[in-house]
Length: 509
Ligand SMILES: Nc1ncnc2c1ncn2[C@@H]1O[C@H](COP(=O)(O)OP(=O)(O)OP(=O)(O)O)[C@@H](O)[C@H]1O
Image (cartoon, rainbow, N blue to C red; front, side, top):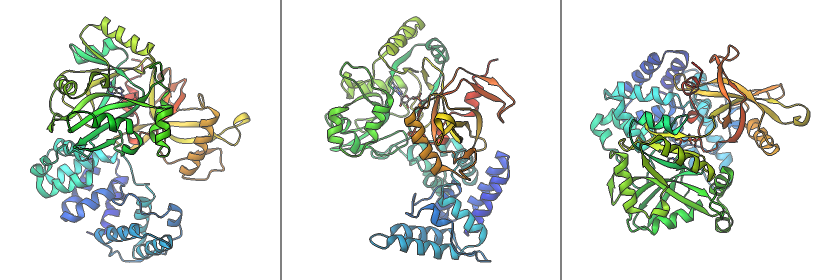
């Protein structure tokens, strides 16, 4: 398969606004891909580089050689070259990388160069494409999309899952199982305005747990080996020795547990989120940090215990397995009730103790990895949304020289784009202003000397607001009222931000 075929398909997908047409273009291409090519094709068309990074800054992509007239490069050749570029090491490797990259670009036509340049710069990456790509794989492999989705949550890599589907259909997809050492996308929660509403949605007695404002962790153990992963599946084992020790102290040595780490003060109240996230992010001086900012862990789910997969078991049974495997002080406090008054009291108590709210959990649902299923419903005392920064305006007065007013957008899974909902500079501390100015300038996609600086939609920010109203001012027809910045969410990717549909659900009737 030629690289130009991918470049053309990518252009066709971008040009067609209909989801069905996009799926059609992609499926048509995947049907033609050979077994080794499918994996690369799916990665490239999802904007993902199999090498992740090749060690060449995007600026060096600007002045590369002129194009050729005839397209001959195959996707396998291009992939092999990128592998070679990445593998360069030692003194002089930077120059060697640039030279090889120059050689690669010299073998490409203009359309291929532009495609590859955008791929390398991360500009083709659109989370939205994931849903479309899943359906394209399903169509090309003639398997139900649900099977592709299930395998994806267990394997985490769409190229690998897609290649398996095309090679061996449903049977090959069924071979993806929970494996110790390979993190699965964590189950996510929907939201409700109150515990009463959440209990109603679940329709019967449910577990209600404290919602800790810490960092999500998935702990894997096999024998004397432990691995810890974040919600974005990054390996943070070295940063959380307390958790590693706690897991190693358990009698069961073949497990996967889901929970939250949080820094607590000596009186047991939680530290602000930034303290926990800063501690977890820090890779240096961990030994000293664990003395000044110790982490506590609270597990709330078990995906595997005693070597048995629990993902498909109902919530109550998974929790029973958790209780059997883990001492009570390492389990998130909870009650099980169908009584709204008791539930509301538990909620108020959690807030009094400084926690973020509660999560109400159905005793019936399986672990829906990677999805906001109806099995978990979070309840918080205030309205917040995680939105993506689309642009920022230079500040004036006291804020001169800083990028201040943020343009905020919600994610649109249909198009892979972001829909602007409002602007705010409220809530920004001097520290945040300095931090965001530096980050946003690096993400700028156009000139930075105008009033508004447009940026690559990458930073997720948590916004508090008083409500959503209809408004002709923005393309989505709605706007946030009194939006203010609470904090940045470096643990979230833009396609994990709140969706346009979630915001629309907040409009008054
Ligand atoms: N007892 C608990 N059960 C489940 N999740 C919990 C619990 N305590 C804290 N959490 C955290 O709450 C999150 C659940 O909410 P959600 O799935 O919406 O994630 P989120 O988008 O990060 O939400 P938020 O910004 O509200 O934390 C989990 O990812 C986890 O980090």
